[in-house]
Length: 599
Image (cartoon, rainbow, N blue to C red):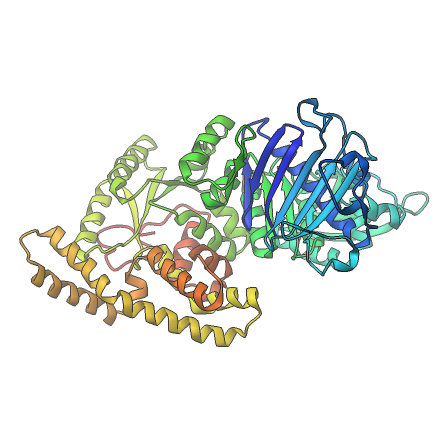
C-alpha cells in the first residue's frame, strides 16, 4: 500500500508530497496538480511491473550527484509518456524524481531525464538499504499499482489483434480500442466482469459475445440487452460504455493492488458516481486512489478520506475537517446545486445531524442495486448538530407550504441521553411543522456497529488468525468496556435529569438515572447501546490495537457487516428511504405514532 508519493522537479511540482490512506479521494481546483499526480502513479505502476524481470546496473552517469548504488532502466512507451516539460520550470540540470514510500517502509525512486533513454528506477528496503539484485526482492515487497486507462468510445468494428500487443498496451491510453479483445483474452476475468456488470446495472444482460464476425471472420460482436432493447455495445450511450470499461478494470486487477482512477465520473450520471464508490469498497482492494471533481463522490466518503491537492503547498494530506472540503468545492464550482434537483424529483429531503450519511449509503448498497439507485437520488444535508434542529422545523414548514405539500422534510436525530418526555416534545413540534422525525433507538448510529462478528472478520483478514477465536476475544473486550462505562452512562442520564429540573439534587438525580438505565436494560438495551458510540469505538479500537495490533472504526465495521448482521431498525429505516415512492407517514413506528409520523 502506498503511504505517500513525493514529486521533485516534476511537471508543475517543485518539491511536494501527497499522502494517502487506504481510500484516498483526490480533489482540487483546475491546475492544482491532480493530473500530474495520477501521471506519476502511472509511471510508478510501470516500474513496479518491470522490477521482477529487471536487469540491475550501476546508476548512470546522467544521475551523478543525485543517485548512487544500483537500479534498473525501463521504458514508458506503453503509457505514451510525454517527455516535453518534464522538469519543473525548465530546470533540465536536475532530473525529475518520483519517490513512492510504501506502508512497509520500502521506497521506489524513479528518475526521469530529458528523453526516453533517461529513465531509471532505484529500490530501497527501508529508507537506506539499496537493492542491488532481483534476488533481494521478496514477493509483494514493492507492491502493485494499477491505474485505469482513460475511457473512450468503443470502436464500432474491432478486429482481433495479437496477444503480445494486447498485453503490452493493456494499461495504455488507447486500451479502450481493444476492449473486446481484452474481454475475450481473459475468460476468468470476463466472467467476473459479466457478473459485476449485470449486478450493478439493473435490467442489463450480456446476450451474446462472439469473435467471428465481419468479412474476414475476425471481428467481435458484443450484444447487450437493456430491457427490450438489444444492440451491439458501440450503439449504446457513453454512460454505459464508461461503466463497462470501469467494471472491466475492476474485474481484471488483483485485489492486492493499489487501484487508481482518474476522474471516473466524467461520463457517469450522479447515481453511478455514488455507486462506483460502493462497488470499489465492496471489492476490498488493498488501496484505492480516485481523482475527481464529483461532489457526489466527495460527499459520500468521510472527510478524512479526502485529500485536497495544492501544489503551492509542501504537503497534500487528508482533510482535517468538512469545511476544508467545502472551501475547495466552492473554488471548484462544484457546490451541491444538484441537491435542489434531487428534492424536486424525489419530493423529500433528509436532514441528518452528523456523519450518518456514509453509513446510510453503505446500508443502501447492501440492500441491492435498485434500492441504492433510489437512495442515490435522495437529497441529504447535514444540519450541523442537534442544536440546530429548530432550523429544520422552519425549513420543513417552508418547503411544505411553498410546494403545497409535495415536498416533505425528514429529520434523523441521535437519541443521545434524551428522556421519554423530551422525545414526545420533539415529536409534537415536528407534527406542527410537517416534519417527519426519526430518532435512533440507540444513542447514535455508531452504536449499531458494535458487532463482534464483522469486527472479528476485519482482524482475521489482516492477520490471518482464526475468526471464531477472535470473536470470543472481541466479545470479552466489549463486555469489559461495558463494565468500565456503566457508571459513566448512568451519570450521563443523571446530568440529563438535572438539566431538565435544576431543583433536583445529585442523589435524587442519580436514583432517577439508575431507574432509567435499568428500564432500558429490561427493554433489551445494554451499555453498548446507550453510551456514546464514537467514544465506545475509541476505547474498543485502542484495546484491539493492544491485543491484535489492529485498530477499527465504526464505518469499517459497517462496510464489513453483512445485511443479515444489521439490526432490523437499520434495515427498515434505510429500506423506507430507498422505496422509490413518496414517504408514507406512520409506516414505521417508534411507539408514539399518534404523536408524529415516523419514517
